[in-house]
Length: 492
Ligand code: NAP
Image (tube, rainbow, N blue to C red; front, top):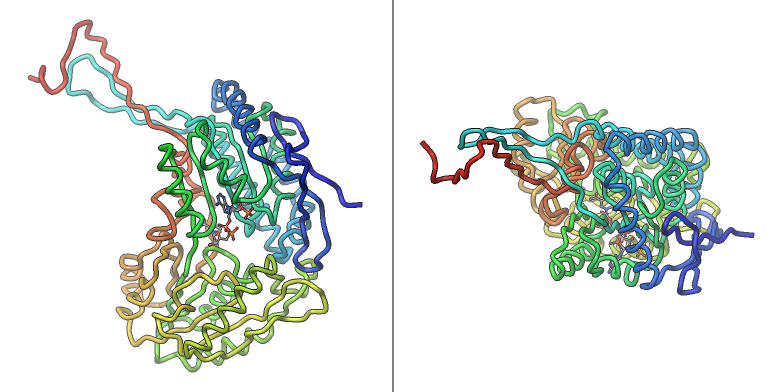
């Protein structure tokens, strides 16, 4: 018997108005893990009303008191880390050590956000007038809509929810339809930790209906979205109609440059991990390898040899390096891009086919293309699977030009032993993140995370920047002179 999950609104588990359910499928085995009720527009309205009530209570709790709830949630997450990680591998396929990392990231951001409960600094500054005091304070935004993808099923929701909560907001949350269970577990943990009813409400269901209702809702003040560029663009346009704040974390086409002076063994490990970790399904995944021509042949030979050893299979098994991709649509998309790559004239060096580890799920071989030109679609479009495109260059300037020749700007990396090359890359690569002698994946929660160009609209998650995403800044002037003082006029 698979369990059926309801909506969580106003602190209660309630039936959805639609009477419909959807299945939560294990992408490795195609077993149904759970059925989940589909929220409808009426449920989004209920969730917004509950969030408004929750906001009235929560925004009055002093921030250190809000932090207490988050610290408790972090402890519960820690206690359940292994169970949550196993469930994650079952729900979306990533190998167990990576699933543990995903939960750890949630624990880290929860503790970090809780710590902000005793910071959230404003500024004090001077006034141009006598006996006048000036400062800024941070205020919560109100009810925030959150829409998340499936590739970090607990970390990404936590990156959004925890900073929003510490700042005093209430949340209406629509998780990906591929990973509703982890999202429900996260909200349950927050409630168990003592979050007042209505402060976080969860409405699973299709993006085109539930997500759309959140984006268009007149009483939701801000939307925080992580997902694809196309959905993000649509959300930005819609949010403009109701003047909502919208923060977008979108796709990537992340380059790693390997120079002729690099430690090749280190670079090999980094490229393997960046390209094929999480089956290439990270927004920061290495999808373009930009190789200096002098080391090209040797590097490719060693890369192919190492990639051949990667084992595709069920992420729960310790011998597995690469789990399944998330669903049939994603598998079809990867196959389509392999076809496109061949048609464009790139050389398929390795992989290119569905893999068969003896399970019925959605497996794909780690795939490497070489002789890729920068204008090819496989060098420009996000594939979101275990596919690496290799482009050869003759010097650093060309490498940086290739790295920047994309509509995205999320992560990037350079392997070099030359400090000048490293700093030139840091200065010139158009991306929100640059790693030196490390892969394109591996963000830490106390640094800002996000990208430029088609990857985002200027906000950053994690770090202290996350607080900015979920607060309004108010300027406060306190005049204790006892007389009318006119700024810009009564100056001596
Ligand atoms: P997606 O198809 O855009 O979906 C993301 C979320 O948006 C899901 O919850 C989806 O719901 C919902 N959605 C779909 N259409 C919608 C609409 N019209 N209105 C409102 N919500 C809608 O992306 P995905 O395939 O889940 O995730 C992969 C993408 O996320 C990649 O491009 C990846 O690079 C990006 N990503 C970016 C970051 C970052 O921080 N920059 C991090 C992780 C992932 P359903 O699930 O019901 O369709």
